[in-house]
Amino acid sequence: MKTNLFQKIMRVILGGFMTLAGIGHLTFQRDEFQAQVPRWLPDNPEFMDFVVISSGVVEIALGLAMIFLWKHQIKVGIALAIFYVLIFPGNISQYTNEISAFGLDTDQKRLIRLFFQPVLILWALWSTGALKYLINRNKK
Image: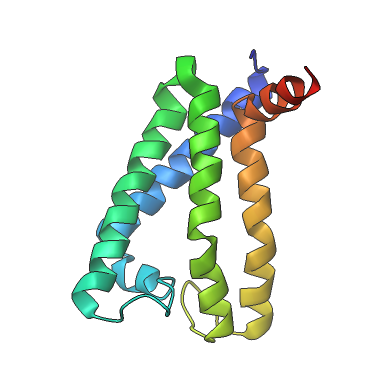
């Protein structure tokens, strides 16, 4: 699927955000990201750190793929959208357990954050042409 210049720019911006977030998982925001590990998972500190580090590595890979693997942009967009769906329980856990991190220090802020996840999913699909691909595929 061809994408226009604005979509390409937005794909690269999202890729940059993902790469930076992934680096944050591994370094300067590691503790903050632990707040988003769902509380129904084991609360062993080493396990929680493993979840943060491994999701950071995935975020870096997906971020760089968004920027550089333009020939596979539809697959990358779908993969990133799936990733956003998979990490959503962490955002729900942060809200339901009233865990403050990333400036989300009130129930209202944590609730508003939940509504941003669908925006990220659509951004990943739209900016890579995957949304149009999926819609056209379902019409056939």
